[in-house]
Image 1 (cartoon, one colour):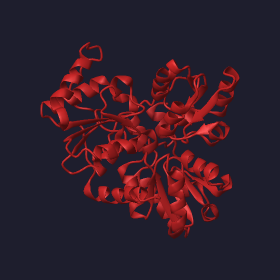
Image 2: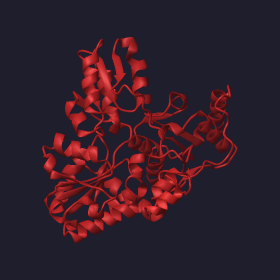
Image 3: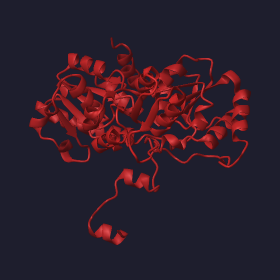
Image 4: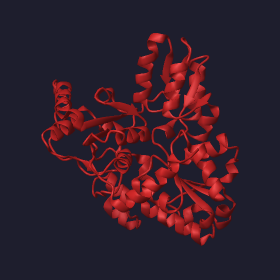
Length: 394
């Protein structure tokens, strides 16, 4: 469509569309700004040696965190691996490390900055490594949602519960309004706590984890859940719907886990007789309902560790991890395949590659602090309050 046609239809590009087109930048958005400096060439045969040398030069001054979804070329340099919250806590437990290099995405580095000391500096090798799910709930949108709940007369009954996969701004909103954070492992505990505090939950930003936990794990019905769409007036909901709902789900999802379908499950069962289907709770409700096992990334890893030799598994989570697990357990005769026929990496997580890591480590080794992720004091205060409520869960 041409510009003239767009003007004729009175269509205005949204801020997110402008960001995707590269025409504007929002430093508070998960889609960050351009990474400065000259990156090494991906074809440089000395990249591994350069990364090792820079890391050795930094010694105990640097602590490298590697999320499970990272490339193997990056994971090999991680001091610890894990999910986002585990890594942030690991960083906080290493106060002697001046630099925390987080090989993950933006919201993860923010959480690490919130939990580490003021003397520690959290670095993200590529500032454009964001999370599409976290981007689906901005501070302005959530503030507007709270206004809608207030006008509907239900805000006083609502307790916000925000998934770890959210920006520091959203975590701070949650802390200000008496809510807590959750992970995919403790979402049920967080919701049980929230319903002891109020009658309703506003669950941000992943609708699928909220719905699956409420319905599958806690016995609610799908009718107890409504979907708040920030792009529609009043979230696309009536006052009556808001008053009747127990779970007000934000219209957000993971771009990787959201692509798995019921057809994916049916297809893999037809292709591999006796296969066990194991999926992450960020998958759609119909996928979770059709799976044999559902759980967090750590749950998936432990389930495969405990699986008998010769067993067959189709895994519904990010491909880097699935491929790594398939290679790890192949000697034990365990057959592990990706749930979907279509290859799907987390595109933003994959922005952290070996050239970016080498550039980061070499810059730090030369005394140049790059790509620091720093959460402002007020945001940190309320985000940390929400995180501490999670840590206090039974």
